Length: 152
Figure 1 (cartoon, rainbow, N blue to C red):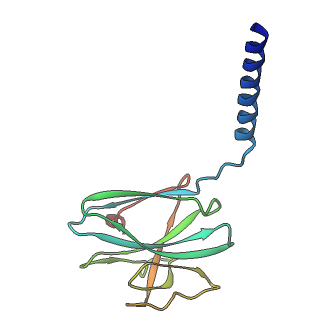
Figure 2: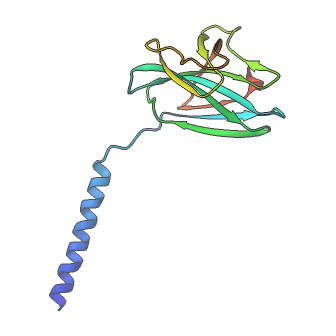
Figure 3: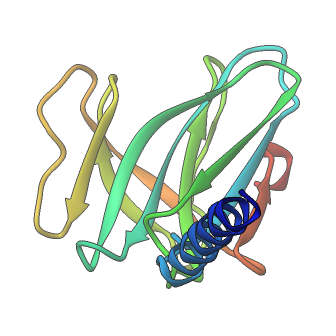
C-alpha cells in the first residue's frame, strides 16, 4: 500500500515537472507597447494610430478607438515589438489633433467607420467620410506612451 502511494506521488511530481518545463520552454508573446490616452474633454475623444506590425513587416493604419469624456483608456498592442514610435490623429466633435504643424508627421487616409490597412501595400478601404489626415509622430519610452490632447 505504501509502495502504491509512493508511485502515485512520483507520477504527480513527474507530471508537475513536465508541465513546468513546457511552460518555461513555450514562447511568451512579447508586449510591444502600452498606450494610455487621457481625455480631458467633456465629449468623447476618437483617435486612429499608425504603428509598425512585426508579422507583416509593415506599418498599419487603424482606427477608431474611443475614450469617454474625462477619463483614461489604456490599450496594449502586441503586434509590434520593434517600434520606437507611433503616429496619432484624434478628434472630438469640436476639435482635432493632427500632425499638420509638426516635423516627422505623416498623412494617411481614414474613413468614418472602423478600418485597418497596411502601408504602403494597401489603401484605406472605401467607406463613409473617407479623407486624408495628418498623424503626429510620438516616441515610445520603454514601450509606453501617455497621450492627451493637451500635449498636442
